[in-house]
Image 1: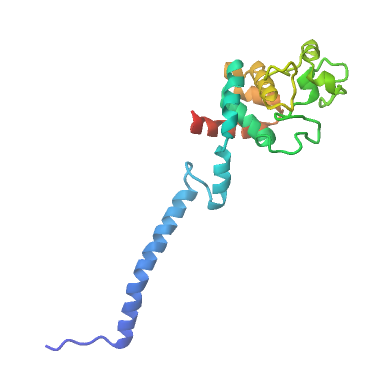
Image 2 (image 1 turned 45 degrees about the horizontal axis):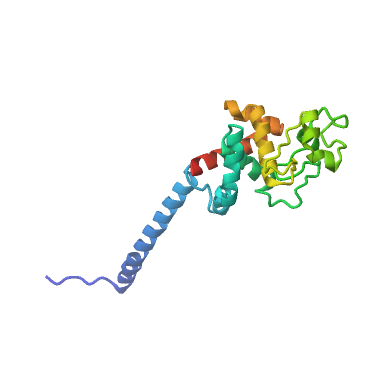
Length: 212
């Protein structure tokens, strides 16, 4: 019995189908992978977010010993200190290290918080009218009950010195609950904003997972 030959048009359609199937499989595979990435809590939510996600983890290596030293002195997690530094000045890359409302230095202390709210000029948001000499004077800070600390042992407490600023922030966080594990209250006292608390905790948990 003689076999029937397929018409040329059908041969062309079958040829196109053979070429199309592998491409369809590739497209389907890519679609499934993208869907899995977008809907996974353990990976980037979108391709656009990937660079930002990588930046979130990037703690300057030279800072880590400083965080650990200051945090150990006040019995708080060093990753909490790193998270504050990231939020406040993006690891001191903000220029200048002075906010529009007057917060100063690497960890953005208001002068009255650094020197002490019992200073006669302190009210409102805490800019105060404190001389530059008094802002770094350890005796003045002790007298007015401020949080400023001499972290590098040079005899002054300077919010524009990274070590002093880290020790001062660790001191503040410790005295406001972080040493007892109440991180949320300590963070809230640093900046009275629920959004701020969420942002700091976000980086804290990222750094805890990555570095500890």
